[in-house]
Image (cartoon, rainbow, N blue to C red; front, side, top):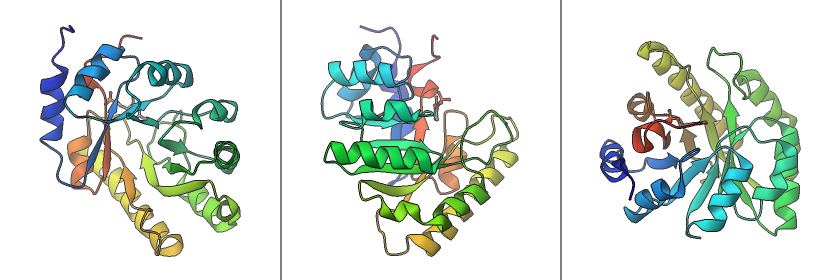
Length: 225
Ligand SMILES: *Cc1c(COP(=O)(O)O)cnc(C)c1O
C-alpha cells in the first residue's frame, strides 16, 4: 500500500483532458508501487528521463506499458532503450536522430520520436531553437533514416508564474508545428503530436493545442531525489 492518492489524482488530471489528448504519466524518481497504482486504473503511457531507472522499471513492471523517454538522451545510451522504448520525446540533434535510427535498425524496429523545441527563456534547457529546427529539416539527411518516425514536436515552457508568457510560448510552438507540418509532413498522418504541458501548465497547454501532456507531480506527488 502507498499512502498517496495516485488513483484520485490520476482521475483528476484525466477529467481535465479533452478527447484526443493523451496523458504521459511522468513517473521518474517514483517507485514501482506508484506506477502500479496508476496502471491498475488503466494508465498505460509512462515517461522516464534516466536510462538506468527506466531499464529497471521496464524489467519489473507489466510489459504492455508504453515507455516514453522524456529526458536528455546521450547518444551512448540509445542502444539500451532501443529494444523496447515506445517513443523518444526529446530529440534535439541530427546526431541523436542518426544514432536512434542505427540502433532501431539493429533491433528491427521503427522508433517514434519527437523533435524537442527550445523556446523557453531558461538557458539550461535542451532543445532546438526555431531556426535550428528549420535547419535540421531543410538539411534533409533525416529523410534517409528509415528506422525513425518523426511524429511531431515536444517542448517545455518557461518555469514562470506568468501564465501569459507560458501561453505565448505554447502558441509559438503551435505555429512552428503548423509550419513544419505543411512544409515537410503534410502527407504524413503520423506527424500529429504536440507534446506540451506539465503539472503547472497543462490546462493552458491543452487550450493551446497540446495532444500529449506530460504530468508527474500532480499525479504522483513531489519527487524525492
Ligand atoms: C519531469 C518532467 C515532466 C513532469 O514535470 P511535473 O512538473 O512533475 O509534471 C515533464 N516533462 C519533462 C521533460 C520532464 O523532465
